[in-house]
View 1 (tube, rainbow, N blue to C red):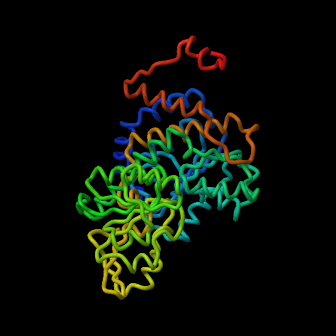
View 2 (view 1 turned 30 degrees about the vertical axis):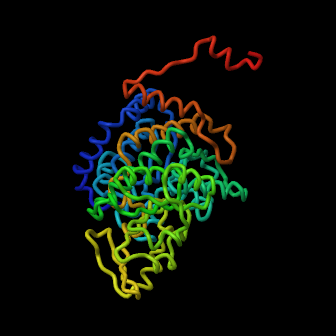
Length: 415
């Protein structure tokens, strides 16, 4: 049933998965629990994620929990064909090929959903959107799902506001053990890994412009500063802009920053962040890339239609656009997620935490299938604390706990 590049690539993928698994003690502990409990026995599940080694470990944990799993990618340039091959060789059903067209991407999602999942794990909201738009006959069978990223949660809240959401969705990205670490430290490190692989240029001394100062933007700016860059932040939220200023960064509009920046990184989850009027102001050789989920933050379509010539940069994921003014602007990874399209994504230990939350959130849905409302639901604190405690134990760290006297003090307003 699967549609992949080449099953013979599986040995290479298996090596990647084994390496990731070696450094994912939280998922290993969850897997042991799932083997005993089989929380997904009799349940069908569709997973849409960036298909590389860490997500493959998660998929195998879910299968050990009894899930009948169908898998697809959530970005055409983040699928690693050898990892996908290893998943299929291990008994999973997968529809995903690196570099697939938009039409193939949609077809792969539809194939992964066609068997009628009870639970979905989504990254960016594409599964939810397809179910509600074109596969509504499957909606009654869905008992709930989990959303991995900020962009997907924005879409879910819009659906909930319009009364369109037809099953419960847990916002995994909002869990503290996810966005505090994954979005900040994971994105902060992996974005610069992807940029370095695509460009092999020094960061120190460069003028780096970071669009958006959410958790991802904080991490990107922090690591750029650590590498010696001069960092400017653009924002629409006045409180976040003040925070960026207090953290020591220049804060400008994108119009002000466009002539100044050497390297631009978008991380807003919105569209049209860097557009025609900004490109026309940029210096020759400026580099733009995106760390948001969808390829709509940097207006690559405008560059494609207005450039007088194009050229391939250092690698196949770096493209130069020469504008009528004679300046060349480089875009990394077609404006898609630079950390995954140009690199391997977040560090293994970071995704161990994020995917432990995913797995436990999916179990929560299975355990509470008859009581959850059709709405956007926060991950319960008990899951956050469970993951935090597992991580501390795996790191050999002990923490204090409240004494009975301290508990009485905190709970008594008359003290």
